[in-house]
Amino acid sequence: MSAPVLWLAVALSGVVTGLAAAPRDVPALAYVGFAGLTFFFARGMESARAHGAWRRGLGLGFVYGLAINALVLRFSVALLIDFGHMPSPVAVLVSLALWSTQALVHAVMGGIVGALSEAVDRERRALFACAILPPALVVAEHVVPMLFPWRLAAGLASWVPMMQAAELGGEPLLTLQVSVTACAFVALGELAPSGLPGSRARLGVLCAAALLVPFAYGSWRVAAVESARSRATRLRVGLVQPNVGIGDKGRDELAFDHFDRLAAMTRTLQERGAEVVVWPETAAPFSMRRTMRREPEGPWSLLDRGIGVPVLMGVVTWHSVVRKHNSAIVLRPDGTYSEPADKLELIPFGEFTPGWGMLRTVVRTVWPDAPFRPYVERLRGFTPGDAPVLLEVDAPGRRRSARPTRLGVMICYEDILPAIGRRVFHAAGGPPDVLVNMTNDAWFGDGDEPHLHLALSRFRAIETRRDLVRAVNTGVSAAITATGEVTKRTATFVPAAVIAEVRLLSGTTPYMVLGDWVVSVAFALIASLAAGRATATVAPGRVA
Image (cartoon, rainbow, N blue to C red; front, top):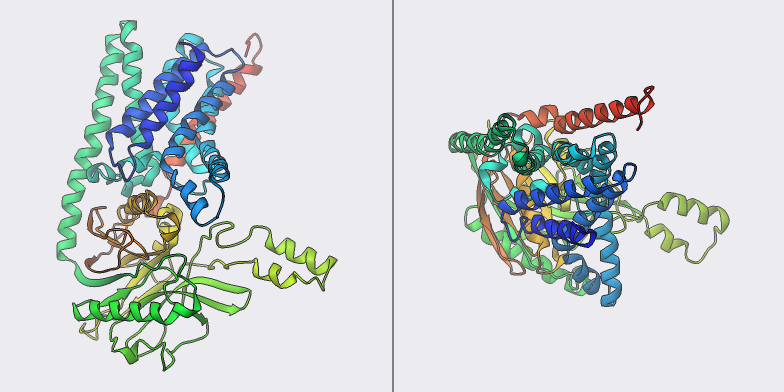
């Protein structure tokens, strides 16, 4: 196979893999795309020079990852044009840098496999690649930072039975399942000319088991979880989607209009039977001092507008001009505020400036009277929360003896971060009874991102076995059951007020207890192979 054909085939495999994810939602293509990568990666390893396999693997992995991210994250171009005010060519170049950074995940995967392949005979490298690509991908997805983290498992987000194994090992286990299945099929083809019926039979059984066992397990778990949900306490949650554009958000002259809209939608939901109402991230058109514990009377009062249910508000809270938080806070029917729950994981440059402390110190030391010093102070952005806080609500009409409902809040893109889901689940006073995501996806326009964001959030519901509701400024607002099934969803860029009936569940899951054990196993396997290769390299009479 010529080099241009090889590189093009790997890129096409990446495109096919990317087509599996939302909003296209074709799970089969996750398997097909990774099988394509495996096949062509094997060809690349066979033709690589003895000491150049790691470079070949690094390059092939990078091309594959670049193709995936260029498709899945193509919304970054419009984001930079519309809100970064960049010329189209510049927006494309900056997006290319983002896609390339994200592609480092697959480059590391390929580099690992290529480096380990150098100690393997050339004729056995294809099968070796089939065996090592899955654990290498699991490790790379975990250790390489991503600005918009998503994994191969994202391709399964619309196949509910196959998603259920996330309660056992999270997204890494699903990534492993997809990649092992794809690689086993390729290995089956690699063994076909060898005339080894025993090996081919075992691989055939592995291929079938890799698909059928997770599907059977998932079908059983969906039925079991739905049975538990049917017996659990119900809570009617109102979701407010005000549809305030980025250009209008933050404009002082529109603040009362926005508040009027939020109040009217909240009152409508209350009249329809909502027991608690959720606003999106930073929806409140005002900021609050963190020490406030009671709603002030006057034009900003919800109680004066007839609101008598708990309202979970997205609001900016502050200690001082330069120390503020992206927070969620509950306004109770008696007019008191809960303590705030702050966003834990901030977006670099979007919500905070990396290295701000050092820059501030340098300016204070070198030029303490600099005219731009106030601007430097404001560059800090938001301050992350120290720890997750569960917010409690008492639904009207509930028995006084009933325990308040614990809300596990994830703000903005935190619902696509498995580590944040685990932190919220293990918060003091937990675990939560239901998960809540408050988001503003207006930045990304009416493209793929809101749908991909929703798809990735579904894994948090399964990993924790908690129902999850999402209030999103411009959509997609949604209700997700503990099985990952989306029962309510809104259109994007329309105002919407939705009632979601959730169940308050208890208990835990293996993933909440054990965490990323799949990554540890994969890392141990890779480390043992690397140690074996190093030993073989230095052994007398052996040639690396």
